[in-house]
Image 1 (spheres, rainbow, N blue to C red):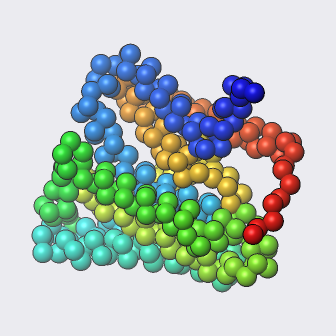
Image 2 (image 1 turned 60 degrees about the horizontal axis):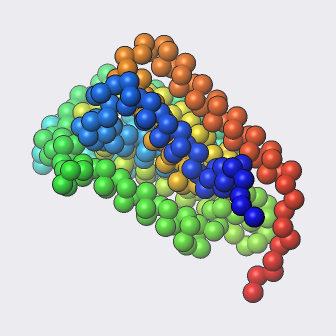
Length: 329
């Protein structure tokens, strides 16, 4: 018996394909309206401009998959950028120490978030919101008291190409592949999914739930640190206004990608599709010269529509009869 259209779309949605379909539709529509949109130069620059959101969304994804949320990732990037730029002070010899500082800030913030959640049992939303405010305050103070700049070797990375593709794009793709392998091909990844799906059952099964959540927050912090390095290469990092709203964009990309905020469910391909969709929407609206207030309105509608479709899909999934469990052999 042939599958109906709804069956096919249900499989696509479960596989994380819906944001990709939406992105393709927007690309086709934008290409017909703006000649500049359909050029290789635009797509190449778009891929590079997406990197910060891609890394932040990957960090948000792993935390959400584990049943939590991280609202501090934007301030992670901002504070790390300010401190790293101050350390480097435009000197090529200090490029590596600056990168280490950016990564250390990210890991440190992730570690504190994880400890607040796992040791003090503070809700992730509250803990990371508090870290957001704390890091933002420190960033404002540091930006007013410290001055720094990005050295030439780091700026070079922004324009570095491997063939027709930017090198940073390929490096970011490698990071996504490594995280995907860890989540879907290792025992640790199984524990992450189990922790997000039901922490109580995971604990009874012998999984160290608190350790897993701590590791997820540290990983998210590290990915935020990598995002800091990317933002510094573009010259956008190191200021008191960098990465504004990044944490909410990353969360939106995850939601648009069909990832359950309850934890335990979600496709990495869907999260990547959410990143691509939001980036394509922003790029298309900019090239079409849509006023900024309309851009915010359209972006919000896209997120709400995607969230509504996700909720409706989960509602139908709950109503469908589940097949009997097959004992493991």
